[in-house]
Length: 224
Ligand code: CA
Image (cartoon, rainbow, N blue to C red):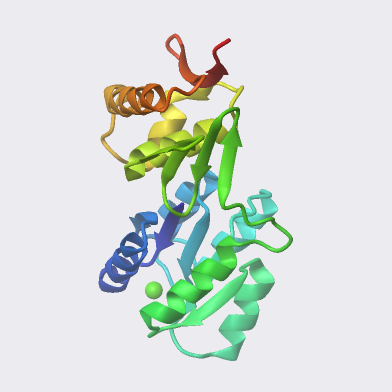
């Protein structure tokens, strides 16, 4: 899960990011409204935590424009005081929930959990593809009785591949989704983790292989 935090008070933004990371959510932080909008528009996030008062573009405007562009990422809006007017405006603009500063870690995490389990969506605890089962809460990969634990990046990469098994996933998409929008990760970072995953698949004796679409990316195949 990847969270975008848009908050110009760096102390709060960084604290939010640490809270998210302590729960294994990956996060990107931006301190400016316009940057926040541009990051959010990439539509790679599972959640956006959005302050209202921001330089260059305020949170209300960001939410409105994202919704106008049909970007449906859940938005948790931060309000400075418990001002009813802000809350109403925030929710009207397309935010899904709001939280008043200061807030506790427990409150934040409860809201994040609620928002990332969207209405009507089935909560999946595992992903299956052919003989493989990827457990989404224990980060383990199993085939029959054999199980291996995956590192966070291995897990995120395989989850993306197993979610769209027959489609080629571009290396660039993997870098953005797993390492973040402005990371320095390069193609060979992805290749390293793909080779770790291939070793784990062969350890499990799975029929599933990670195939390479030359110069594009990867997809899953079932060997006969
Ligand atoms: Ca602010």
